[in-house]
Length: 206
Length: 191
Image 1 (cartoon, rainbow over the protein chains, first blue to last red):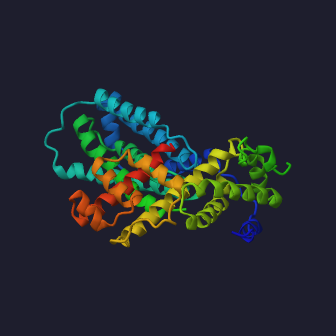
Image 2 (image 1 turned 45 degrees about the horizontal axis):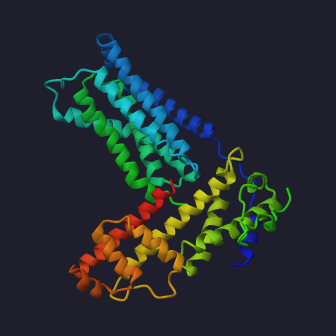
Image 3 (image 1 turned 135 degrees about the horizontal axis):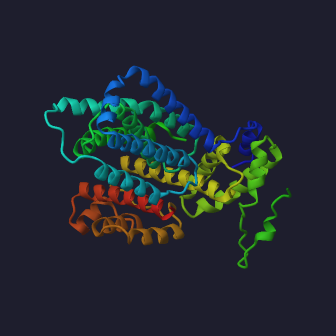
């Protein structure tokens, strides 16, 4: 291979702004805040206010758990865009374990009676839909990064988006049942993760 | 920053060693538009890549992958953080492109898989055969046997079918699964 190739690369090498992790995190935070504020005015908040009045502790735990999961998964996703990023498997497993324990300990065990099946599916699809902006934002940041484990990055993006969708949805869902949340909230988050895992590694190649 | 002197890095056996760590400050300068520094980085990386890939790929693939890695480094140079060492960042990119090439080569070979798929003597170096034999030992027995017969002994699909009692299509399936498993093992071994 001749040095003409290297000369060609050097000739086209303009100064580049370095990627800053905190800038990427800030972009996602702003995106999430805009979505949250926007939906705050679109979704009826009387349901949340009623639920908070009836079950303040459990509703607070519910919202906090999903908010924390969003922050952790988003942070891990952004860090994974660096080529030699650590896997942080223990952090990932600890987050998922803490998440599951919080749900198991913080909520009621019985499934709410009289709920039609369609209600749960609405919940799941609503979470999936609300996860899309954050997933899209993280996906765009992934194209600017250089992830050498694209499937792992895609999984983290899906989990972050799904957790954020669940966080937003939690404000207008008064149900605090473990069975319900594992089934429908879990289904929404898993769907987001599955879609991200299927699509992102195929689309984002470098 | 002075030019990296290869003579300073000769090992006792006489093989020169490219040290990537001094490339960090040069890469930082290159990000700011310093062309001389960037040329230095790319030249040293090219030399390192040739040695690295020569032991991991068939000779006719080495130059292509070297170019792919340097192009990837060029496109993603903004992702390098000067506060971190250069070598892990660059080696991660090199390894990623190398494994990508392996997947592409194996996928293409499967489409062309026929009775004459056995290795020609020019296809792999002795070192690659030794590494392949070691990697095969980590596979399930049925896959290991088929892949050893195919890639180490150079048997055809028909011969492997006769020796193992498996149908020709099962032999091809086992070769495909074994290759996927090998790539997965290679990825995990570098993590």
